[in-house]
Amino acid sequence: MHQPLSLSVLALAVAIAPAAKADEAPLPGLASYRTGDFEGAVKQLRAALPELRSWDRMRAWTYLSASLFALGKADEAELSLRQLFREFPEAKLDSSVFEPALVALSERVHAEESAKTAQKRLTPPPPPPPSSSLPAADVPVVTRSRGPLPFIATGGAVLALGAGAWFITSSSNQRNQLDQSFGASHLSSLTYPQAQALSAGANRDMALFAASAATSAALTGLAIWLWTRSEE
Image 1 (cartoon, rainbow, N blue to C red):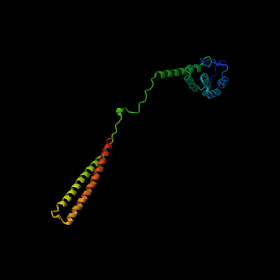
Image 2: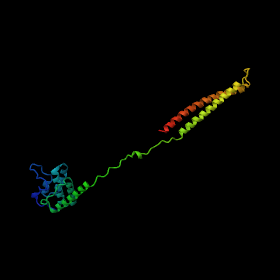
Image 3: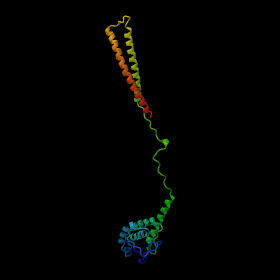
Image 4: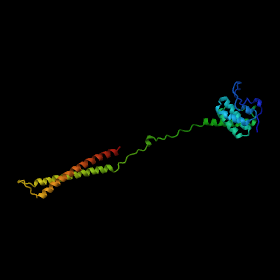
């Protein structure tokens, strides 16, 4: 177990730090350290560190490192020293206060932390992450497929229109045939069943023409809507 060199000069924990004022609150754990109760000093210093600031915080890290080193916990003492030098790069253990082995460890750790800080300053910052958005030229263009519906609707409209033309022509022919069958005596040359069949056929074809015309108009409107929508 390592022991401090002199209890009469323990107030000089850090060489560059100013002397403590007489009215300042005592550092938690310092009294335990001075009496050789290093376990108690470690517990008190660790508990007090979150509440300490500036000068007291620097002293606490120093005495915590010294207490751990005195307990033979060199690895934990090194970690404590690293935290000391990260928060207070200007800190330095006084060789007249602490034993040479601890001072040598602190100097090595201080040199390593200083080198890390210098390396961080020389290392350029990493480039910003690439933007998730693609350039305008690389954005894929999605087109909507027309599908078969516009063609089907167009074809149906044409067929319905053709059927309507055929039905109206057939109806007209049958009516003309009826009209031509009457002579000067206004008597039909056709028998009654023949005249009745022609009249019924003309009426039927006229009705089919009307249905075909309506169907063609509806399919034409549907085809126009489908073609317009497929081009959006």
